[in-house]
Image (cartoon, rainbow, N blue to C red):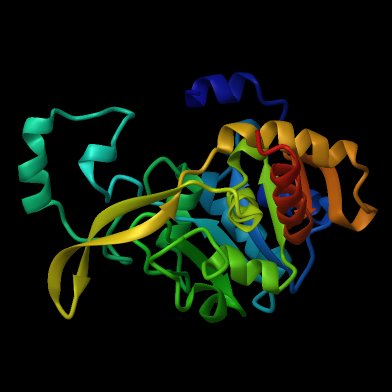
Length: 272
């Protein structure tokens, strides 16, 4: 959506103070651990854009809380796996020879949106060391959440998603649906029903660029909207789900552990 279209669809200019008010109203509070997925355009015309939203989130959480976002870079991978779009197989050799290794400081996010890409370079933000499934974090728990991100099963229990689960953290969906809820991949993993696949990426090991192979799951986020609707229809405890508007965006704050456990159970019961 273009900026002019966002302006036309906005009732007022969405300011930092408005966002802080709405974030508190939906249940976000100081000291929480929360992973955020967002669509800035759905929130209306935000004065200051992604910077304003990030600052509002930090002000509400305070430095005693922990703010997490996905910083995935699916393009740092084997070109033979690329589908949207694919590249000619005659290019593969050059890509294998020349693709830069993943670098937490330099590698941009891919398809994560403006807010996640802006957050990546914010002061005090750190990034985990996975070539395609990295996460960024700021605040009290960033070291614990980002440390020892397993190369195998990068969205499993030994990932930042697993650390958020251990801390009984939250998911905040700002103007996006369950299809954007990365934490539900952890539920897929915990279901034990994931098909196993091999992937490869260029990384730096002891100063040298190398292609490494690792184990992953064949994830299916296309089912997440159905699972999310079933979760809400199950009438979760009031503390597990809050629904309200942040800016103009329909938003949800939910218990990460609740949606992960529900996803795992749903997949086990509906495996076919």
